[in-house]
Length: 325
Image (tube, rainbow, N blue to C red; front, side):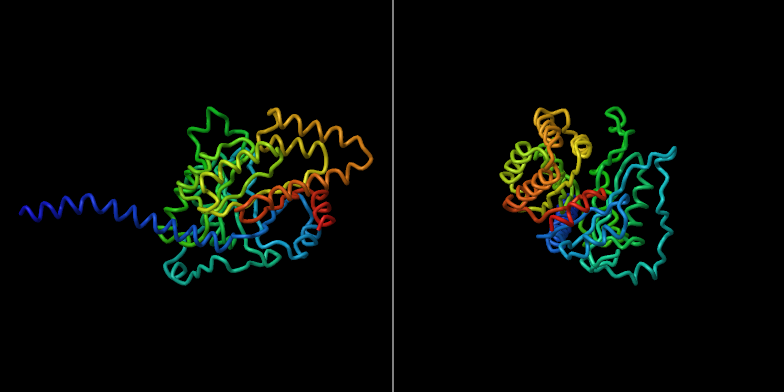
């Protein structure tokens, strides 16, 4: 009886340990898959405001490996309305589904498709539908999980809303249940201009397997962040792909600073002043392209980064990107 009691005690405590070890191995395997898919890549942001012809002109230059599709806020009266209804898969469909996590997709160029899923103001059930839709209907080979920039995500409302951490938890649960492919990389965004390195570390600990950063609009803030991230060894744990912005006017630069929540910082105001002064000169077009090239060079000089992510997003930005290539 004593032996049975000892076995029961061992079993009671060892089961959660075995489960934790299994989940840890699962996470390690997914990080390896993410590194295989997104190591040393150049990705590009899909734009819904740029003509397909202009986008294809840039894509067809052959520089890009992956395309990232954003998930912009729904500002309608029903922000929780899912535009991607997902009917349940039959047992036969689930069994016949093949998961080739790095197979190229035609959309329209042969690049890996990464779909952003943003929490915004959406309910957990709607977010689960969007996760499943991104993979099973849209053919995404990677997921970028973000909290989102909906204006309704006020400081008082955020504690009651889903965020990138709840999305990471939901996606990993769906993977364990077999509803999402086990090897599909789960990505997150980092904002080097305003966030601390330990916040990114929390995301990695929560299951993030690849990171896309906001662009280094503020050189000092970005360099300090990268130094801290490197000291923590995060680039050795997950691929970090760095953003490159293509602002083409003072207004566009102001938009980028607001988007990264850095417009009110001292360095942010200084950068905007530089743009205001430069915009008055006749050679502003050359100045801004040189500024973009310096930004891209800063990204390339970061030892341990896994690639860059181009964000032209506007017609003028795409034309600049085409000319600079």
